[in-house]
Image (cartoon, rainbow, N blue to C red; front, side, top):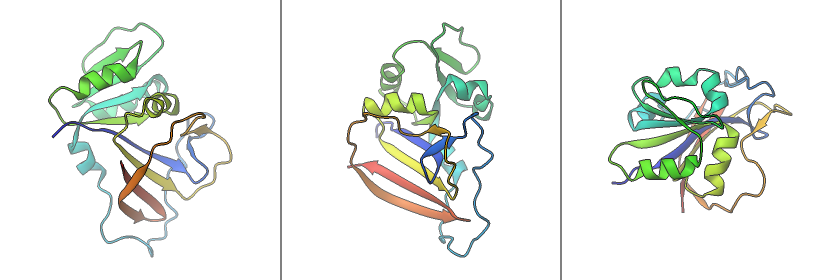
Length: 174
């Protein structure tokens, strides 16, 4: 079975993945569990499926890589930086690097964020699965998940979960 590139992140109802300052403290449910699905999303089980994480430099600067010490982490950056420990800096075509990585033996690849990085993967049409948690908040402004001029990507809903007002939608490409 070949490796998959899986985008997994949360967004506001109006399509933002972070506030204007990159903040994410708004990523919480509404506290109402009346509509919760019996089966719940298990982030740790998801992490067991992956061995590689891809993130942009802003996510790196926010120290998100610290959550993935046991994984190989690729960071897209416009600067030439030296790799260290499990961190690999990519100054160049990140999509090509990750497609090459996908051909190797291993677990799935977690496309962590942010929006500019994800945009290059969407435009290259190389994301196999989209897992999006819809947060019950309208932010009004911030960093959007989807930028403009994307190709049409047809998806099929595979699973969904509701947990305290957060709806997690799991799609695969059709």
